Length: 244
Image 1: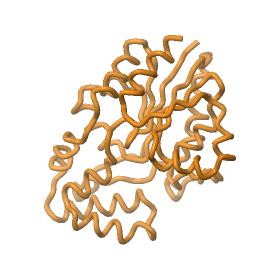
Image 2 (image 1 turned 180 degrees about the horizontal axis):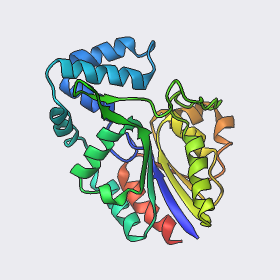
Image 3 (image 1 turned 120 degrees about the vertical axis):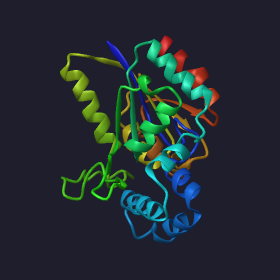
Image 4 (image 1 turned 135 degrees about the horizontal axis):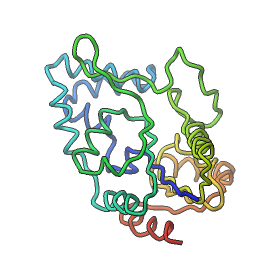
């Protein structure tokens, strides 16, 4: 028997949106352009464009990394990760950010070794030595066709299905899944959770508001729900959940 913990990254594990923190923090001008284009562009494509623009302004990959290292990451959530590592609970991140942002932040705060797997949009260095990002599901790939409010480039529900199948293929039965999220793209994986699982839902964010508007959608979530506003609640509740 094995238990796992799955986390969204922005506003779930960390206390900010890493796209906003990076682009606005380095160039409010480019972020304004993002705001103007956001309804017409797919988000990951727009973030790739924004990264190229801030590098055109003279910011380097190291400048981006240095700025990311200052993003708010609460001691409580870091304690959660350290506790899970001590319990030998695999921790999987499912995020619409990108590998460079996530890896940089985790390493800066000394918790990279607490993470088992990262499922997100890949970053890369192009022929012009620019930091770039591309979709987790490319436009040339088979699309996920999910009817839930998922992003075009990632369906976290399907990712969770595949994750569970990989563990089952190894002969491992998942006793508990703790899922922590805040955004509407965390709804789809929440519908995959079982009564023995727990969804740690952040209050006052887009998914909380979505479920308040649509109680019939909330009824599709069969797991236990732990509502939290501050990371202290997760630090208080998650170790107890895995201790039962």
